[in-house]
Length: 94
Image (cartoon, rainbow, N blue to C red; front, side, top):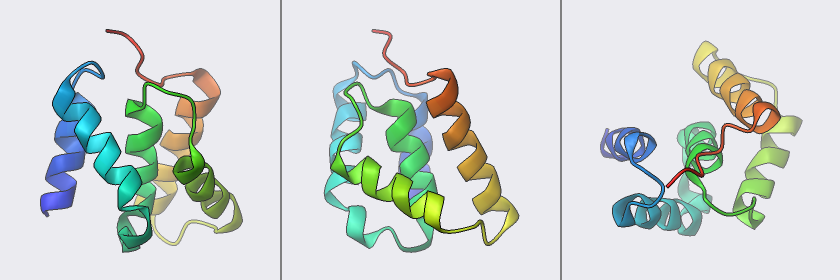
Protein backbone atom coordinates (compact mmCIF):
# COMPACT_ATOMS: atom_id res chain seq x y z
CA UNK A 1 0.00 0.00 0.00
CA UNK A 2 2.88 2.35 0.77
CA UNK A 3 4.26 2.03 -2.76
CA UNK A 4 0.87 2.87 -4.27
CA UNK A 5 0.48 5.92 -2.02
CA UNK A 6 3.99 7.15 -2.84
CA UNK A 7 3.40 6.69 -6.57
CA UNK A 8 0.05 8.47 -6.36
CA UNK A 9 1.59 11.44 -4.58
CA UNK A 10 4.44 11.48 -7.06
CA UNK A 11 2.02 11.72 -9.99
CA UNK A 12 0.40 14.78 -8.39
CA UNK A 13 3.67 16.57 -7.74
CA UNK A 14 5.31 19.09 -9.98
CA UNK A 15 8.45 17.70 -11.66
CA UNK A 16 10.44 20.60 -10.25
CA UNK A 17 9.48 19.51 -6.75
CA UNK A 18 12.52 18.03 -4.99
CA UNK A 19 10.42 15.32 -3.37
CA UNK A 20 9.05 14.23 -6.75
CA UNK A 21 12.53 13.94 -8.20
CA UNK A 22 13.64 11.93 -5.18
CA UNK A 23 10.71 9.61 -5.83
CA UNK A 24 11.69 9.16 -9.48
CA UNK A 25 15.28 8.50 -8.43
CA UNK A 26 14.11 5.92 -5.88
CA UNK A 27 11.94 4.16 -8.47
CA UNK A 28 14.88 3.94 -10.87
CA UNK A 29 17.12 2.43 -8.17
CA UNK A 30 14.47 -0.13 -7.15
CA UNK A 31 13.59 -1.31 -10.66
CA UNK A 32 14.41 -4.95 -10.00
CA UNK A 33 12.11 -5.18 -6.98
CA UNK A 34 8.85 -3.92 -8.46
CA UNK A 35 7.25 -7.33 -8.62
CA UNK A 36 3.60 -7.00 -9.65
CA UNK A 37 3.72 -3.19 -9.63
CA UNK A 38 6.22 -2.76 -12.45
CA UNK A 39 3.58 -1.40 -14.84
CA UNK A 40 2.56 1.26 -12.32
CA UNK A 41 6.22 2.12 -11.77
CA UNK A 42 6.77 2.40 -15.54
CA UNK A 43 3.75 4.67 -15.95
CA UNK A 44 4.99 6.85 -13.10
CA UNK A 45 8.50 7.08 -14.53
CA UNK A 46 7.23 7.93 -18.02
CA UNK A 47 4.75 10.47 -16.65
CA UNK A 48 7.01 12.21 -14.12
CA UNK A 49 10.50 12.07 -15.60
CA UNK A 50 12.01 15.38 -16.62
CA UNK A 51 14.79 13.72 -18.58
CA UNK A 52 14.78 11.48 -21.60
CA UNK A 53 13.97 7.82 -21.15
CA UNK A 54 16.74 6.06 -19.26
CA UNK A 55 17.88 2.44 -19.13
CA UNK A 56 15.34 1.51 -16.45
CA UNK A 57 12.45 2.88 -18.48
CA UNK A 58 13.71 1.18 -21.65
CA UNK A 59 13.96 -2.18 -19.84
CA UNK A 60 10.44 -1.84 -18.45
CA UNK A 61 9.10 -0.72 -21.84
CA UNK A 62 10.66 -3.76 -23.50
CA UNK A 63 9.08 -5.95 -20.82
CA UNK A 64 5.71 -4.31 -21.47
CA UNK A 65 5.98 -4.91 -25.22
CA UNK A 66 6.95 -8.57 -24.75
CA UNK A 67 4.31 -9.41 -22.15
CA UNK A 68 0.57 -9.26 -22.83
CA UNK A 69 -1.57 -7.76 -20.04
CA UNK A 70 -2.61 -10.27 -17.40
CA UNK A 71 -5.46 -8.25 -15.88
CA UNK A 72 -7.67 -5.25 -16.49
CA UNK A 73 -5.35 -3.17 -14.26
CA UNK A 74 -2.35 -4.28 -16.28
CA UNK A 75 -4.09 -3.46 -19.58
CA UNK A 76 -5.12 -0.03 -18.33
CA UNK A 77 -1.62 0.86 -17.11
CA UNK A 78 -0.06 -0.32 -20.35
CA UNK A 79 -2.58 1.70 -22.38
CA UNK A 80 -1.98 4.85 -20.29
CA UNK A 81 1.79 4.41 -20.66
CA UNK A 82 1.52 4.01 -24.43
CA UNK A 83 -0.74 7.06 -24.61
CA UNK A 84 1.74 9.12 -22.59
CA UNK A 85 4.57 8.13 -24.89
CA UNK A 86 2.56 8.65 -28.07
CA UNK A 87 1.02 11.99 -27.11
CA UNK A 88 3.94 13.40 -25.18
CA UNK A 89 2.29 13.71 -21.81
CA UNK A 90 5.63 13.53 -20.04
CA UNK A 91 5.41 16.27 -17.41
CA UNK A 92 8.08 18.83 -18.20
CA UNK A 93 6.42 22.04 -17.13
CA UNK A 94 8.05 23.88 -14.25
